[in-house]
Length: 486
Image 1: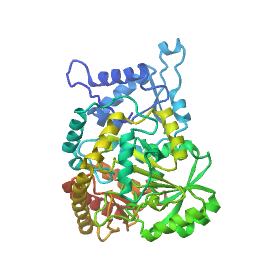
Image 2 (image 1 turned 180 degrees about the vertical axis):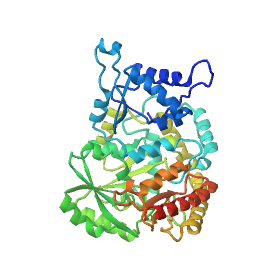
Image 3 (image 1 turned 30 degrees about the horizontal axis):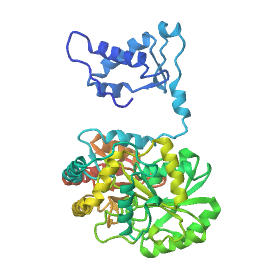
Image 4 (image 1 turned 135 degrees about the vertical axis):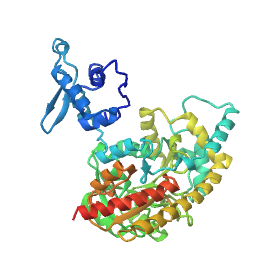
């Protein structure tokens, strides 16, 4: 509903309000806007159509008179479609009832706004967790596909666990990280998020409790909550999740497993120390608490390689290890992997076959070529150099423009700076005012309900110029809100 690509024709032959009236009427009669659908506000429609508000009001008055829509005080304007054609036929299904009854919870409203705004031209995206188009390996990707085109490449479905050649390449790659695994204990997935969904429906009971860092990326997606599970946060410090609390929290909340991002945590950028990793493994082994290790940022270290993955310390098969090419190579490739005990991988592979019959064959062959050709390591070295420059640019801009009204810790890798605002302001107002100025933010409270004085700042996506100018404009908005909110 928020994406209205159509605009009326400025030709004087048909009045603008009649064009708008016919457009909305067609949406309703074609079933695109079903009974109960809330119509955007007059102001929003006027902005989308590029007309005066009075023109929209005239069109809506006509539609109301014709029985297509109805306005209620405080409830907005909704589709009712009380036309004679509808009254003399079988009423259409109320799709809004079906939408509300779906078992998968909708994204948080702010997340939905972010997802839409990311595709608005000209917006400075200060929170986006992906590489800038400037850093994507277009030339190398062309080389990959050119190499693939010169061989007889199967284009059919792959096996339940994914392309064997790719799994062999992943096995070789993770061995360099200290993880010993055979291809049979690897499942290829369409990104780490799909791995989480498979785990949520394939391994856990409804009502289970997931322990995780607080704040956490997992709070911003409803993959576990939609499967009837609860999330319980364990505090972080500068070394990572506070392992001394895990046994107590597991007992109190009947924790089923622990989800963690130990390397360049999302959203805080924290790097779990080697000592904390060994402590975490010992606690979870003693408590028989399985771990999901989300390690998608591992290769994006900037100052020094991170400690070995938790999976490298795992001698009892308690860790499910998630990796991905989305952060380092291309979000559009949609290739990730899960490493774990074979019975678990077999279970997840069976569910994956039931849901999508396997990830893209072409993407899997391309991912395998990235590893086997040596282009992956070559590319990631270049990305690290560019991200270092971006991190320093962001830190310098923060120090210059908001150093007196915010605090943060410079990350040693990944994409994110977790910024704490010192003046008490409405983070929602800041989000709205920034978006109105063409700046897209990721408020901290989407990662932790109580982190309402934080921002997740990403230095990976916006250009260097936009990073600097965006942070400068952000400073002005924060200061104005600090005065107005007193």
